[in-house]
Length: 488
Ligand code: PHE
View 1 (cartoon, protein in one colour):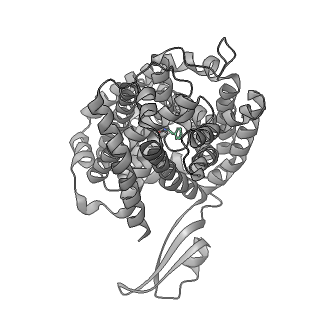
View 2: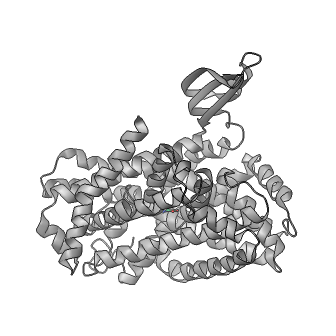
View 3: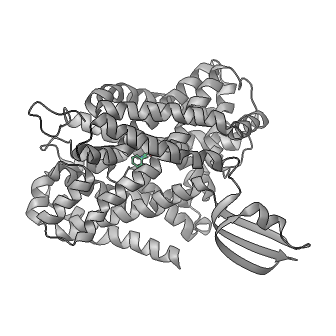
């Protein structure tokens, strides 16, 4: 963030710029890459409904609270929480929100940059015409061979880390404002275009039903946790990104309207992405639950079938890359802003954060190949003639060895999380909701009403009251009950 003329903490040019920047942060891989594959893994419509409820009950109110805190203190999240705790005489534990946020930022950035690297790889693959006329077999083979090459993946990862930290180092005004202003509308246009294509595919109604037919028998506590976690991830909440952006938001802009716009745009992009991907899944006989590769296994087939598909495909992956870029910048912002306040130059702070996240990223890169068998939260179940004979939990294990060591005649089922899965679940499903619930609690229970009313600039008292009610009771209760049921 560049400084404004008075040399103080900078402020966005206008409310529109804030909306663009916050949308830039929110709309990213979470919407286009992650949302569709977790819908697929969690059974469709009921999961989508849970996710939408989480956006309403926790996402929107917490986003308002987070921006409010940042805008009041006008500092990095770590210092914002410190200052607000003092100002409102709140328990010291709330200071941990800032620290935990910066830590989640590192963790998220480390795998986010890896997946963004996949987009770069696919721009190249599209241009080279690898997918012209491709069917399911070709797109799967292409993706598997890509996963099996950690060296190439590291190259793309490195390129993206440099891209992202380069912008962060220059400051958000110079680096971000102009880019976001142009590229967001292009991405929306592209999604509409692809949606038009999806409409013409034979699997459209199957895809539509999969996303919107609610079947609660498909929902497990795990999927509810994933839906909740994703509502935080997709809106960039609970880790300070939006708080940091809020600290640059002009005072006079109304909180409620701004947040509604950002959340609506974010949700629309996610839902449209699903409505593009699932019709293709069902038209070409792909598996909805193929995991993180879903986007890469489906869309190339569609591009391969379209006239000029190589160009359209390359353009699409470029736009997703840009969406990821504008998100990655905000993921790094809490840690970088803190280091800058501690006296580092922006360039040095960005370099340090970038190098750390880059190093950690190798854990995720290798998760898709050489380290795939080392997993955490492993449950090992032995079956004999359809009967469960033995079940064991390992915090960390080599799943290949577990499978190999099974006695003869026993079928083993091993379920665990790779390094990548672990970092993803730890941040999205635990750290972000925890940070978010603490923010809701802090604003709802510890901040003075006059301060909230003054900072929020919400004209309607009914809306203000509703928001505070949800923040005090509904959001914390929803998150807590989901956590508790997951633990049991
Ligand atoms: N919201 C971003 C996305 O959906 C990811 C993100 C997470 C950005 C956390 C900032 C902070 O891709």
